[in-house]
Length: 146
Image (cartoon, rainbow, N blue to C red; front, side, top):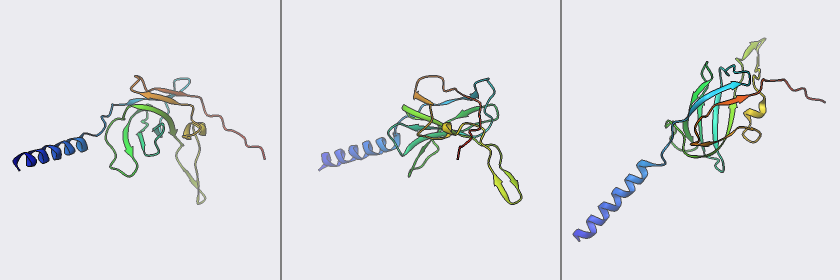
């Protein structure tokens, strides 16, 4: 009886250790700039894990273009600093401040919208690889032919 109790306690301790530890994260930070070196001064950068619809890491872009990531897991507690290892698509959500005139809100895009789309973004990285800086082309408004 005593051995069964000890095995049960050891098993329970192992389960708590596994649940508490989780997957280790790596500190990820970097800088978003335009090709001419000018920093992107607002927005959010998102690292979406290839093959996962639940896991991503995101960070707010500061006025100097720098960011630091924190984990986000859909349906679970989020906000843990860093990012887990893996291959990631990187996309950026950035618009200028809203212009509210005549009861109409207007949003002005400041980057090419392909960079804001998880499926179209050309930006990719592997964590851990080292430097997580990205250069994006200047925004050129696209005209849509009707």
